[in-house]
Length: 380
Image 1: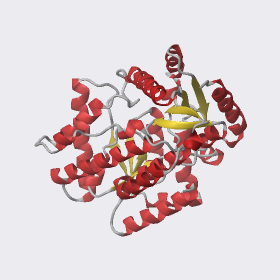
Image 2: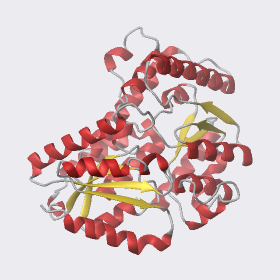
Image 3: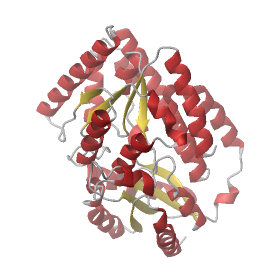
Image 4: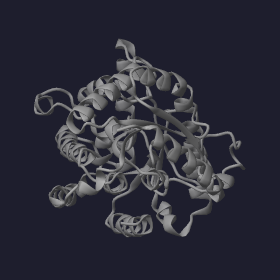
């Protein structure tokens, strides 16, 4: 499905559910927002997971300097310009202000304030210890209270547990999608669509898996396998197409749209216990060892994961995996650790390309050349 078709279809979907009384809560895409609470409260969670272009970035400069994260700039630009395919943003009822990074906070506050969208606050600790887990529980309680005040009804444990079970099943299916032997561009489009619709896409995903498993994968054998890490490739970003045009194929998405998200599954036995459901969300936050939001050991865990993935992939296929570390321009979150990531991985024999880019159309030729040169270096 082309991006234009996906966005048109999604726009109609949002209009239908909103006409049926469901309100929409939007937020900048990252991995610590408790969607289960939003769902249990009767709202629809809308992830801002859309790439940009020059016009969208430029439209944000009235509020933020050009040295701000390009994704944050483009997200503001979407609300400012409302391009035709993004008219559905008029349907947003509330916007979550959270602190995944400085750009996240600034962009979310600007969108809420200047486009008259009531805000909901949810803040997350940057560390993981006893006190930070207590703080996270307090934030969950406050978030729950905000949702209940907006909806006018209490979120009961039964509905929250039901939502957790639903999201668990959904993430397990996404994991299976990410491990299929298909073109990375095709895989990403399936995952992106699924992450827009959430668990409502479960049955469609099951059907797609059965179809894709029957398709031959011989056409992939001449493509260089790539693990994409760093920043996500959002809807409208041509990065994966450039990789395929250069002779590569993304076999695994180690990003928020990928492993970081679907690896956060709550233990089914605990869900069915008498434990406070909010405590289960605290435990998930504690166990989220790959999320780049928290400082403690995340980079070491990330490197260990990629080393293990490369070893298993080579044993299975006889091919080594190259790593493209995608850095959206001015994302300090990712760029600060990129030299260390590259050095550590190359020490263990994994080739790495640190690829920093924004959404400017003018850079396509230069970026494509860099990707092609990197892929030629990978020997299999």
